[in-house]
Length: 111
Image (cartoon, rainbow, N blue to C red; front, side, top):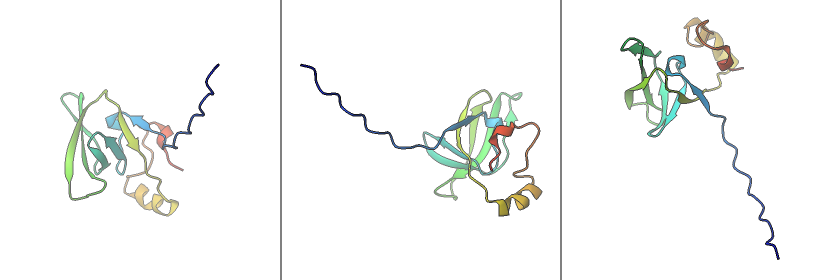
């Protein structure tokens, strides 16, 4: 006799994970790594002839904790991109925080 097949439980829905190069990070992106969730405060900058990328971040749950995260330029980073309401887009675009940059891929635009 064969055993009855067990029904698989549906897996909980997860947010799609976006993995980008550290140089493609934007202000407001949330980085997820082994130490928790961090929010990007400033544009990334490179050192070591462009092989090392540094990003100034703070903890998403505690803004008082700031750090500079360092990655190799070739490593991918898990990112949660926040949705920006249309009312704030014009203000952020004027400050050059949200407007598309020709050097960045257009797939990351949020609508």
